[in-house]
Structures are given as structure tokens and as C-alpha cells.
Image 1 (cartoon, rainbow, N blue to C red):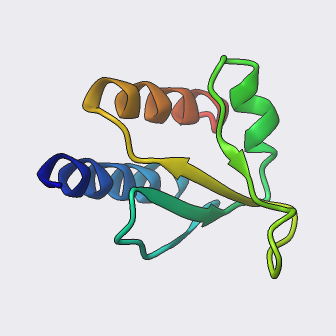
Image 2: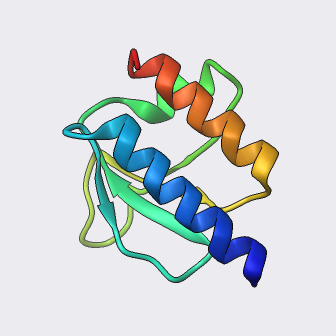
Length: 89
């Protein structure tokens, strides 16, 4: 639980810093983070061999909603690094 809490906090802070005006993050206490962006992140990250959950088929959500799992430190850092690349940060 400590790992998930620590890594979730890291991911949320990194998403806020990386996305600033482009990403809206929804609070979470689970082992995943839901967020919204108009950028086609699913496709952009897939090109970098990173798979995130496209949530546009969830009831009440639409295109632009994504979910990422809270993983270990190395995997989370790889995800954030790829996000920075595709977002030009």
C-alpha cells in the first residue's frame, strides 16, 4: 500500500507538471488515475510501446478520457518520460 500511495502521488504531481493546461486529473485513492486531455495520448503512447486505457467507451465518459495504472517507480518514470516527449515538454 505504501508503494501505491507514494507512486500515485508521484504520478499525479508529474501529470500536473507535464500537462499543466492540457490534462485534467481526477482525484483517486485507487491504484489507477483517471484523466482527461484533448491530445490523442492513446495513439501517441502506443507508438512508444506504452499502453494506457482509453476510457471513451465507459458509460458517462467520452473521447479524451484515459486511465493509467499506478505501477513501480521505473515503469512510472518511463510513462512520464514518454508523456513529456509526446507533449513536447
